[in-house]
Image (cartoon, rainbow, N blue to C red):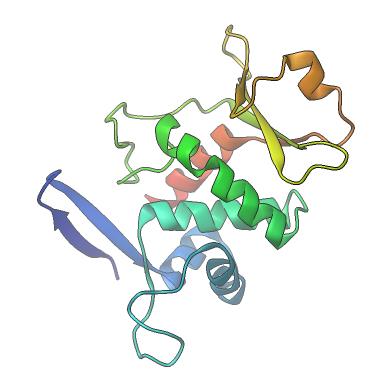
Amino acid sequence: MLYRYINLTRRLPIHYYYARELAIHLSINLAKWKRWSREFLPPDPLGGLRSGYARQYSLKEAFLVALGGFLVGDLKFTVVEARAILTDLQPWLSRWGYLRLSANGASRKGDGGVDPHALIFVRPAGAGGAGYLYWRDSLISGAEGEGVGNTLPKAEFFNFPAVRMINIGSFAKAFYHRIT
């Protein structure tokens, strides 16, 4: 069942989803979805496992859980690594319009969509350093890619053996298509 809450400051409906709904729409095992949400989201403010309330997910939370699951399941990051990547990328995902308020394409900026060909490259920060460095690029854009939170030149960024690619544009397009 879909719940709706009207945000009076923005006058936009905010939809909340249950885990069962999201698991069905995204073709993910319900137990796996619940495990991912425990890993990638803070504790539910309405209660714990025995409170009697089912967790409700905003579209932003559902996107972050699905992206975390994609990082773990498909790209073979560990849960700790995926959590760190989500924490690092969340401000940029919001700025680029991936963390939407509604599934029909309206983002916070109201730009109506994002680049469906966007890529994010992830590499470890260095041989001894902890954390990750990121590079954003697009398959069709003629513009040069840019570092996300780093100032490394392109050649130096990609001159590292463990660079992995997240096709964030395709992932977001598939996610929002399945939710609507």
